Length: 130
Image 1 (cartoon, rainbow, N blue to C red):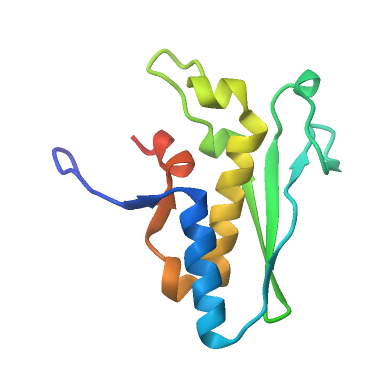
Image 2 (cartoon, rainbow, N blue to C red; image 1 turned 180 degrees about the vertical axis):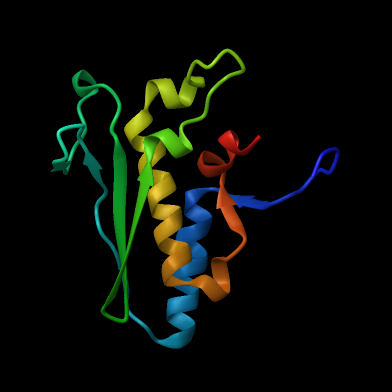
């Protein structure tokens, strides 16, 4: 809708971790977080990302809640934040793998704890929404 400003609740990734862990404690569920992985343009997933490879195609993170996996994949082209001229913002230019991993982690937390985290987004996810 033109001329309508919509607002979304935002938190840092630490807020997702806190809310998810509190929700797990409340339900007496175990919860664990996998280390992020990044997809290279060759299609292979990597446990680390080197700057010499450019920007990752995607990042994925899995949250295990009560033994059930919730895996989320964030695509660079969908989340990378840019300036008006199309260049990446400073954080996305300096640490694209880290920013993308935070997006994937936030997605995974929302998948694992939808009743507690639906409608809450990270700064890294929302910068491109404008």
